[in-house]
Length: 138
Image (tube, rainbow, N blue to C red; front, side):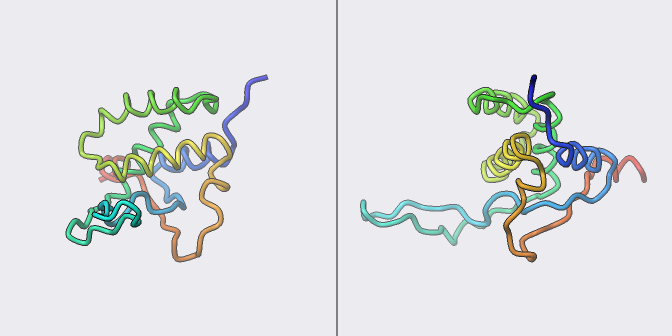
């Protein structure tokens, strides 16, 4: 019997598609990392390049990935191939947003939405709403 997508992931997708707020985490990083000139030193934060993160756009990509699959993918390489194909529709995604969305989508497909976002401090959670639904309602 094929594994099914968890009901809480399907509910988060349904809420997103209906324009309802969805509890989630911020996707992406605020700064890029730069390599150190010392080969043994850890990478450093590049404070000269602040990255703007569009949470609605990143989550739209995340939910597009989730919606593509009828069952959780078994193979991560297959998942990434689909992700790269779908990412072409989001030309304005920066790498940090894309990677964050992929990570959340993969985890939500495999273990459920609740477990995918669990374990963070209360201030780390955000609510996102599908901007396409909000725009069509006005």
